[in-house]
Image (cartoon, rainbow, N blue to C red; front, side, top):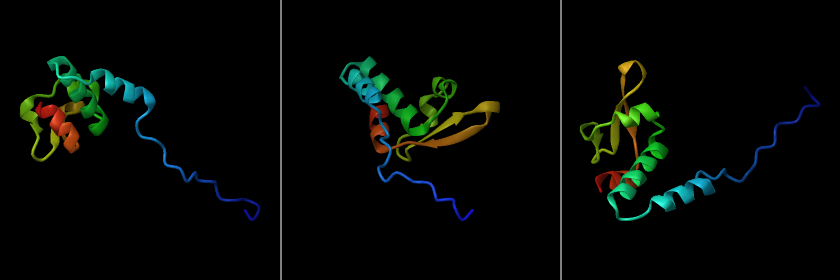
Length: 94
């Protein structure tokens, strides 16, 4: 153990959004209903990490835009709260 050295940890933080995600969000930017819907879906995916089936079954009644939380039904039909950010709440409100 005396010859072992601790691992080197990089000091630079890992970028959260890749260039592909930036281009995807730029493609969805616009004022048309479909573009706003797509932006809201992608933002909700990024903020909450929900599964596709959970997001597909999400209703407006399950969204609390003031508290910035979505209640989704996960595996086994168990509800769980998924918090999201202010920008996502704005996208969902539009």
